[in-house]
Amino acid sequence: MTDKLDAKLEQAKGTVKEAFGKLTDDKKIEAEGVVDKVAGKAKEVAADVKDTIEGVKEGIKNQTEDDQTVE
Image 1: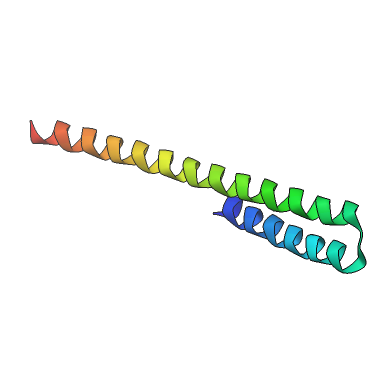
Image 2: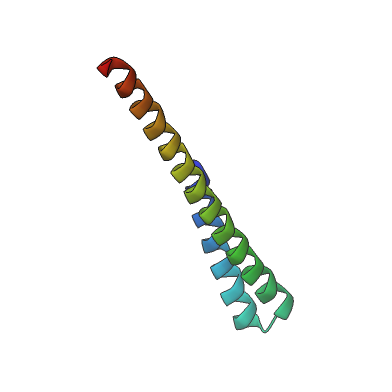
């Protein structure tokens, strides 16, 4: 869960940075903000994939255990 939280914080930081860059007409800061937002989103997606894989693994483990107790 902390991976997702870190990703969301990075996206928020990027949004603030981008807005500050636009406000001050600083293209470098604005671009850094966009990069931070994209990186944060990528990390969020990776965390979602990781959670999904863990869920599938747990489901397979539970199914295997259930199949063994039925016999």
